[in-house]
Image (spheres, rainbow, N blue to C red):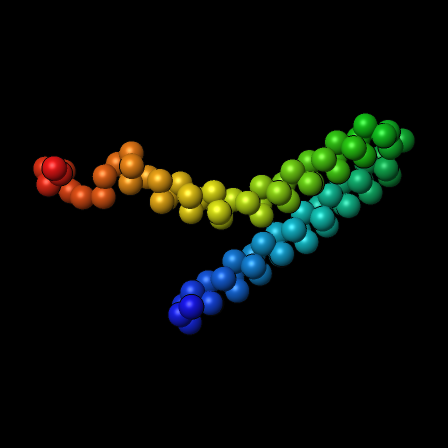
Length: 86
């Protein structure tokens, strides 16, 4: 692995973990705000928890999905200028 690759992997892992921490803090904040405002129902707890888990999964998987889309884009749009195809 080159030094640029290792730096980018470190940055990617930092952004992933920081995003998960922010999502957890926001979810806890929403639960506390909802419980202070009204009586907290089980459906709201499940809804906020499921939303936080889904957001965490999307945040973790999104870089890989973008990479797969970038790699597969050459089969849809060829990687050469117009008029130079075979």
